[in-house]
Amino acid sequence: MTRAEDALSPEALGFDPQQLSERYRHERDRRVRDDAESQFVEVTNDSPFANKYLADDPYSEPLERAPIHDEREVIIIGGGWVGMMTAARLIQAGVTDVRIIESAADFGGTWYWNRYPGAQCDIESYSYLPLLEETGYMPKLRYSFAPEIYEHAQRIGKHFDLYKDAVFQTWVTGLRWEEADARWVVSTNRGDEMKARFVCLGTGPANRPRLPGIPGVDTFKGHTFHTCRWDYEYTGGSHEGNLDKLADKTVAIIGTGATAVQCVPALGASAGQLYVFQRTPSSVDARNNSETDPVWTAGLKPGWQAERQKRFGETLLGGPVYPEFEDEGWTRMVRNLQALAAQAGDVPPEGLGNLAQLADFKTMEQIRSRVDETIDDPELADKLKAFYNQFCKRPTFNDEYLETFNRPNVELVDVSDTKGVERITERGIVANGKEYEVDCIIYASGFEITSSYQRRIGIPIYGIDGESIYDHWEGGTRTMHGLMSRGFPNLFLCGGLFVFQLGANYCYGVDVQADHVAYTVSEVTRRGNTVANVSAEAEQRWIDDQLSAESSQAQLILGGSPESCTPGYYNQEGTHERYRDVRLESYGKGLGAYRKVLDSWRAAGELEGLELS
Ligand code: NDP
Image (tube, rainbow, N blue to C red):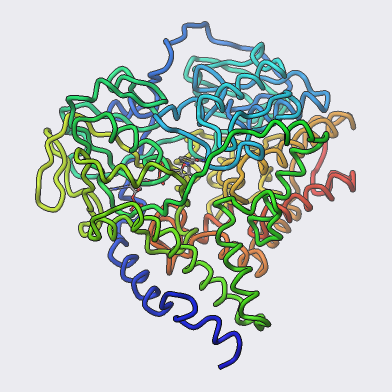
């Protein structure tokens, strides 16, 4: 036996890779559905059934105001991180006439809407929370809870004076380029017609909830809500839990993704009876949260946040693992890979794929062993174990979720045999041939993250000669830098799925784009131009780069492979064809490479690829 064979034998590893591969395949195959993404119900603003899941705002009183007809230099659609960071960078670049239009009653985007108990960001706060140095704020914990994050959004709004020009509780219903005066016309559900020279679309990757298309989903006579519109009036309590009004209620939650993992502990502690309907278990690693160390903060030098974000990104994408991230859950896989490589000695390049797979098995074995350590009943423990590669689904981190299933009032209902909940009735949920009568159904069923752009954004966009952007993209998204599309001048498509797929820390990717948009707008204006349209060649060059072998290869490592991963939104519910389309919406070489492309484009100072007039 060579040193590598010795180190990588089942005995040395502590698991049999062959057996695990077979189990992964089996678990995947029995969950793949022919109806793939069409198994979900589309939630639109104008569907009376869906209004409560999207248009209705349980957190604020409705606003009354007269329609607005005016003009701005820049309009940003969306007041989440993209909108706020883009506005902040524009203002820093001297472009101050900026209006944000937001559907919620305040800034915060996903953190405005997602107020469910236990909501938390599982990316460390020092890297995730934007503009910490600019606003002079230091998070209280390494992993912040939602109220602190929402408050920080408001802090940014105040710091950059974004409130004075913002328009809230307003849904954009259309975008039209008016050739004659080279302006965008932005229409809304309030009868507004606002004009702007530049528009940034920043509606985010997870702004539209999705509902499972379970037969009978609209017939239930009890109470229902989606986790992103948490109904505290019904449940009582707060983000901290203590959902006292559920004490005499039987509650069902459908879904066991990152959201459910965070809110199930509070539900289990408060509800009279809780049924958790699980189709696929999440991988649940330790959280190990801690308070921010004042000695560490006292020693920080200016520029620390950008540096930390960069190092965090590098660590996640294969190392080196910087010391500050050695105990970080997201780096467990990279650390395992490096340890295996050290044990195996020289591994030829063709063996690296196998080594990565072994490191993944090892990582998931460690995460599965947490289930055994927590759950006494081995049959229940097996159902709670995730048998797929770690990044097939969003990894989760929680110290209370698994423990909740030891409570006598909590029951896990495994619906994997029927590929999901069978049926919803007037009284409750049918699963595995049994009707569970419940008072309330909570949908932790996620968001339209990777469905078609049109369905996700829901805004008609007409550019030069009235061309619809969705027609322009019929064969796949066409952009330069993922930001601008030919025929749609002065329009920036910021954040969203493109950035979501670039790396785990969404806000860092958003800032990379925000800097770029701010530069482009200010530079076009400084040169005395009013219109910037991407040339056909520049658009094609970018697409060629996105589809290059190097990009495609990198993307497969980052994302969930459609052939081997369990179904989920990462791989369009396991369908191969759609996956290729979505790949057009990101940059497979990752955030570091993307940043370099944008940095050198700006450094060249040529606005290359833009036709200016
Ligand atoms: P997900 O899309 O991750 O999960 C949806 C859940 O609903 C899955 O468990 C899914 O099962 C289940 N489901 C769907 N249809 C059915 C059905 N017919 N029957 C039974 N179960 C069904 O949504 P989340 O809201 O949990 O998370 C969305 C994303 O939001 C995350 O991936 C993450 O990116 C982000 N997020 C981030 C957090 C953070 O800390 N930063 C916290 C929370 C969310 P199946 O897996 O089998 O499809």
